[in-house]
Length: 322
Image (cartoon, rainbow, N blue to C red; front, side, top):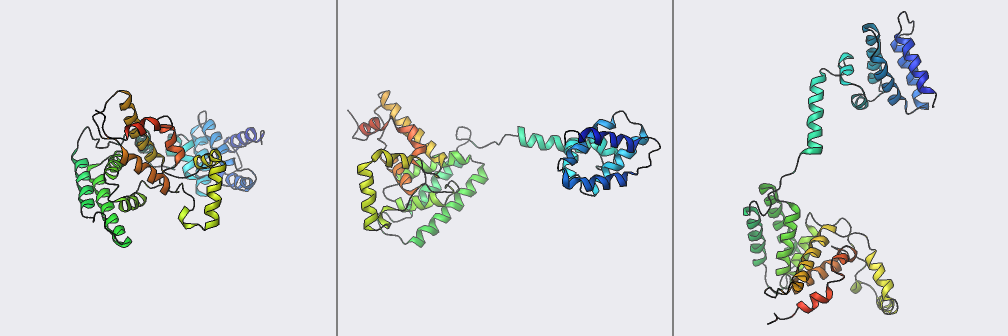
């Protein structure tokens, strides 16, 4: 195949040469017979046409245009590939496109949209109306739930879906940053975890931020006695192996783990700065543990943020120091 490209270039020159007896249609047909044996043919013939076009006469360019038209119309060369590789002026002269200027404008717009257009979210520091409404609607939904009372699973699901609809509408209407919304939602969830844990867990697992794959194995309370005993023995005999297994789990939301990790690290760094005028984050730790247990986040994602902080957090999860 390394010698095919020079032969192909010579063949094209002979077809477009003055007095040639080979019609462009016959040449295109011959290329179609070669295509099954050379899948690189479309790219090669387009490169040859680009190179031959420059120094050819008007008549020769007409023949090259006829060859290009035949290649596109017979699907030997896909139209998208021709637009990508062939000069737009050649495409216009060959009647493949109506205007090279229109094509250039469209390409510029597409490239601008793909490469340079910035998604402008309504950040908290710029405008707080959307986030204020988000917090209000979330707290209203939680206040309508019975505290400490049992709720039917169907009722929890229905109220969770209603709240999700409101949250999605607020994100769309105010152009809120979805990552910042999740950050605020996690704050609200940690503050209401003890009274509405079931609802919060269902809401997060049904939300757009839920991971595609949960980082969880079969729940401990759903296995038989023999399997429970086996797991406990494994943890006691080889805790390092158990920990390594937990760290290597797949799935979970890396974004949620990152947000929670930053929150925990903030509290720990505040301890280093001797700032004691804030509430200890017991609820945040409980939320993190619950999300790890349910598979929403995995231990391996949050561990880099907190592995050196647990001692500081534990010392801070007490009554405010005087």
